[in-house]
Amino acid sequence: MRNRCPSCMTPIGYSRCRAIEKVLESVKVTCQNTKYGCKEAFSYSMKQKHGKACLFAPCSCPLPDCDFEGSSEELSAHFGNVHKYSATRFHYDRLAPITLGVSEKFLILREETDGSLFILHNKVENLGNVVTLSRIGPSTERGFFYELTVKAPSDGSNLRLQSFTKSTPKRVDSPQSLGFLLVPSQFSCISRQIKMDLRLGRSDRFSYYQRPGGA
Image (cartoon, rainbow, N blue to C red; front, side, top):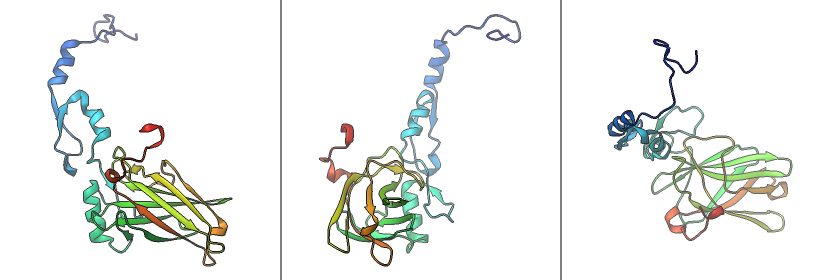
């Protein structure tokens, strides 16, 4: 029967066992990301909470044919050593010209100073291209402020997006985003490319920009 001890058939209640809870609280465990560099130790009851916020959570290489996995710093070092020429390089707080093929699903960007990896996502829709930016890193880290500007080759009109990145530990086709830029087809040139300017700043330098909802 349900809610009975299988050995003696005594009814089993739902009372909390304070003694066992105290024992579990006294037990210290290490983070599951120890091999990636985390040195934190905490009570067993905090294991799940720490796991969600750990800055050493493993991140995957964004290239489809590479299975490397490591901390955000390890991934940056790996990409710089193994895939150095597979990304468009840029500097924080400087204007960077970006060229994206109309049918190109994504473009990997790598910052020259600290090696951080960002993904410029591109999705083709009926009205044009939907473009957004994300970072490869722990999902709980703060976002980076960025500005994307696209100019029409015909009349010089432009579109601009100001937003913050959201981080994901691996490249995904449809990432969560705080904003996107819809680029109509007339903004692409004859060679079916979208030319844009990107300015991306360190998150701590743009703290005066308020996120949606005050987050």
